[in-house]
Image (cartoon, rainbow, N blue to C red; front, side, top):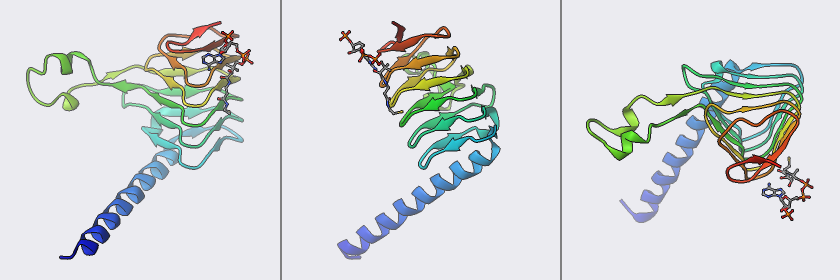
Length: 166
Ligand SMILES: CC(C)(COP(=O)(O)OP(=O)(O)OC[C@H]1O[C@@H](n2cnc3c(N)ncnc32)[C@H](O)[C@@H]1OP(=O)(O)O)[C@@H](O)C(=O)NCCC(=O)NCCS
């Protein structure tokens, strides 16, 4: 087999995987409980769609990633703007599984699962990360590139790593 044939096969495989990834997102998108006038832009990745709900007039912008587990939910309220590349996931590995890998493979162990709740009229700036278990109160702005590790009260502007109300 020549080098160009190997390259060809490699790119065909990558292309195939990208399509499977898109199909998975479309399938999950169908399961999401969406309100009226919801916009989900291109390249948004959704996992665990049946445990995600998005309120009326909310926009999820391109390249964001929403992942809910089987035992946890993502609930996003009405009139929210979730900007580009925002990452929210309700599941995460336990750190102990990596610190003391006693048996089996860490990534196969039970994950932590805690729901994420976003109120109404919330703007989450680009590239922000919302940790599992966090509630962001209504009428709140989360600045771009924030790492939100704890609940944010309603009517606040919060940003930074870790995000703190200003
Ligand atoms: C949070 C935000 C709305 C604050 O805007 P603002 O009130 O005009 O803030 P200012 O520019 O007056 O900044 C106030 C201070 O906070 C700091 N700051 C503002 N946003 C910050 C952020 N995301 N992370 C860290 N620090 C931030 C500024 O550096 C400034 O610090 P200083 O007082 O030491 O000079 C804005 O910075 C932001 O992050 N907007 C989101 C932008 C975005 O994601 N757009 C994508 C299109 S949807």
